[in-house]
Amino acid sequence: MQKITFCIPSKSNLRYLKTCIPSIRTNANRKDHDIIVFVDSDEDGTIEWLSENAQYYNITYYINPDINQRLYGIGKAYDYCIEKSKTDVVMIFHADMMLGIDADINAYKHLQKGTVVCSTRIEPPIHPNAGEKILEDFGMWPEEFKEDEFNKYIDTLLVTNKNKTTEGIFAPWMIHKDDILSIGGHDSILHSAREDSDLFNRFVLNGYRLVQSWDSLVYHLTGRGGQFQHGVVTTDSSQKSEAWQKLMVNSTKEFMRKWGSPVKHTPMMKPIIPHKYDVKFDVINMRPQVLSMLEPLCDALQTDLTNDIVDYYISIEQPNTSFDLNKRLYNKDNHDIIVTFDCNKLNNQNFQILQNLSEILDNNQLDVGTYEFDIFNLVINNVVFYENKLIRK
Image 1 (tube, rainbow, N blue to C red):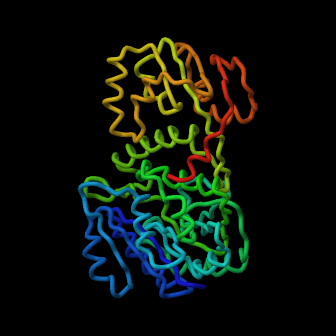
Image 2: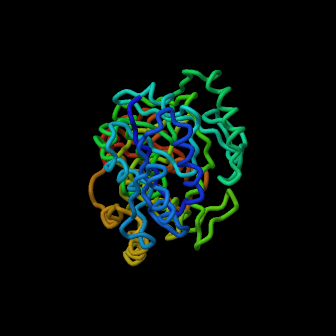
Image 3: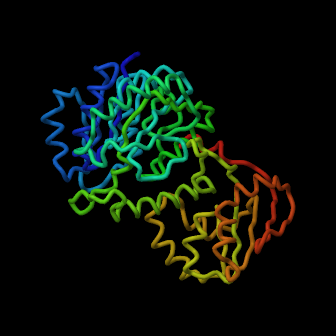
């Protein structure tokens, strides 16, 4: 195989890098792959360790110019690594992953232009499994990693899973550098959450083939990047920092504003992409506390709230979004689909209809006309799909 570049963002992830990087050097089929680390924050001595070990492990590292002041975010950090890479192929890798034996070449053998190849994760049994990964406990923390046991387990899977593939995607994944650059990389509006789901949607819409290789294996410590809080690494595997939780809330709203639907995928992690429609909500008896729930679900929102209430919401929410909320909340334009309803009749059940409106429209294949659905009156003026406009950021 040709040389590739492992791209690894680090947000005070020193304890993970100390296990992650040696695993690449030990277990990769090719020992001279490039490794680029982007240090987004350093509250644990990451930079010092990289400086001391860069030559030994042949690591190139870059530092956020606003280190510990403002985060790049994982998507922007990955794109920085990709742009700095000198190889034709890059592999997106998490700091909390350990590469399995020959995982590089067993992913690479499926790689072509217009293809994204992901490895299969082996994880401790923390999160549910829909069949897209393997649950086996070889340690909950990098210091506990049972490397010898893991390698023996891998030896067996390299035989039983030889050349097995399914259709789906999750980190780590490998791609030709030109293929990811051609669609603009990660979308910067999704800083450190939902950025992968957005990119995976765009891969599919751009016609890229997704391959999961089951003899390319990594051990994954299940998303520990958000566990550094107030200068201390949390020890609870389910605990996330307050900052990370806020990022997730904001990025979920941004994803909804952009795509018009929540993140959707098959059990094997292949994205499901409902059509993107142009939708306006027209709401009477609007309650101020519901505004933040409804606004991200549509392209424009008309209510009977006073301007003072709307302006206050905009002042609070605008710093969290790249969308112009004045255009969304003071919008007089015509829209393809108008959904009118009484907010007093809104409950948890029919709120789910609004969250999944794109999928409901797809399933019912509604044409131009007027329809009643639960508490909602739908006026469809035009049936146009806009998702292909989202391929490039």
